[in-house]
Image (cartoon, rainbow, N blue to C red; front, side):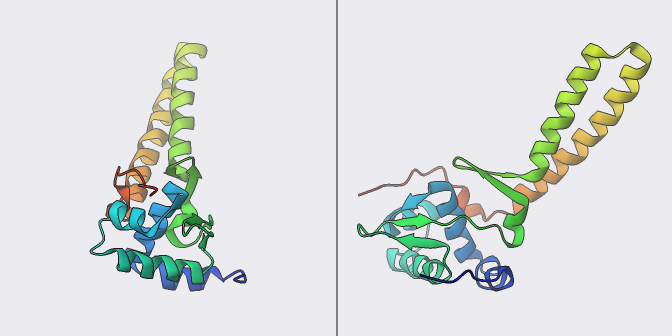
Length: 156
């Protein structure tokens, strides 16, 4: 078993390499996948390239290979992934939750507060919502594009 690897090492060996990060993000979303699933899901040039990146991730303790040859993801937060939460098959930036909080405050303020206070609360909350929306969009752009594929894993 691999010892816990330092986040700075993961930043360098995974976060600094687009394809490896793409494969890891795909695995975060899939949870369990074969090399063929990764090849198809990430749009890689060959299954052997998928295998190379999976073996690299396995060596870093980010995936584990089971007896059937399927890889299981080990969730770690490092590099840009520190700003994301895994919820099911979704990777959501932390700012998304702030955005939802501001939206709830806007609605609650519009319903519950008297008119003088309502206007100020709605304006300030709308400002927070807008800033969080921009941050959310920026963070989503940091996730490798290939791993955003809607291709479902093919477990053969």
